[in-house]
Image 1 (tube, rainbow, N blue to C red):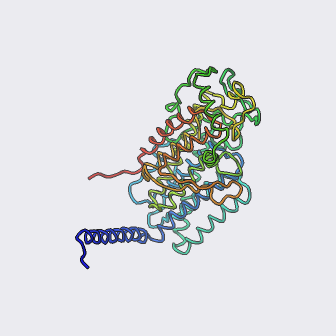
Image 2: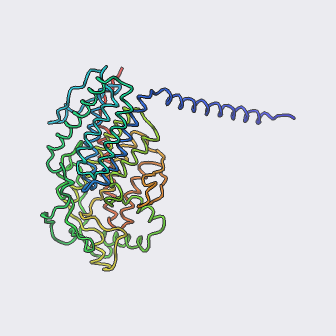
Image 3: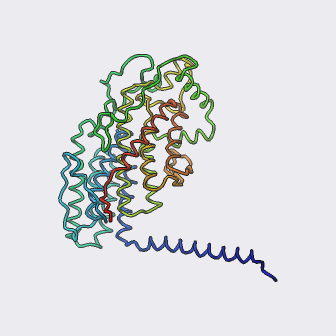
Length: 455
């Protein structure tokens, strides 16, 4: 049988492709296998504790979105500082840039174990932030800490373990003490709702839902100390002039919400429920969803410990600062929820798919913190990062199927859309939240934590 020249070319091309694929696979396997057991443990410890963090915030009274996001920032900072002596490269401590943050001196390099320091730091600082967690959660914290201590103890000498544990705990204590100097944010989970706050009165101004009346949530959160930004630099754009005219912005946006809700399509209901993380005790918080996404990225990519610490540090800062900036705008404009407008001017019997939260509408917190986190994750893992978000997989009390995404930006925009579909936000809330959140994420992403030497 005669073999044509084109067939030979195809055969050779196929063979080369197979060889190239095999080489790439061997390279990837080699990268993973070249890591020591110690390096594997380091990332595993960080991931374990951040998974536990979601459990702790879900079950601890008072951990609403702003409170949880603030905790992420401080916990991420403490863990970063506790790992600093063991990171490869010239990573910088924040102690020289933050007034009032006094950190302990690290043990000698030959007597420092990064895993032990991290485990001790996470255990100590989560124990402080979640002091009022229910007993089962606190038992789980102790179990996790003991698990890693036992696994590590047989691999290092007792002096190194003692010194590293002490350093991790002292870092956690130092960061927690610094967090306490922010009086508005410190232990805010004990006083979420402010019955003394008197919101401004007038057309278009926020009032509590008639069906679920609650005092305003954290009306002074916009004055909480941020990590990277100045909240006043990210004030939302002025609102359009309030109007009930049928051809004006408010009325048109209200009709959009009504039309989408009658009824929600199966796809839109899936989107709405997938991002609806406002159910204390049942789900983690809205920023918690982005921590869950971050955990999945770390689990999938298994980056170096240096990149892992940078990821959690910057995601925590972005979420914390986005929520502060959002609340700054919310209580500057105190815009009513669509529910109030629709019931007053269009249809008194209309109800949102999910109850409206007890704070002003503009801009959307989901949109802002989602865009901020997405910007940070995109800068670290690529603008076209594909993943299946399985944040709610395995939940029986709040079962929602995983969703596939082609980028973090796509996730952020769908998150923003979900608030319109639920009927709790105007489109302008979502769009402005996305805009400001992306700006905050960019500023946090540009935070230089490593001195990169140039030749």
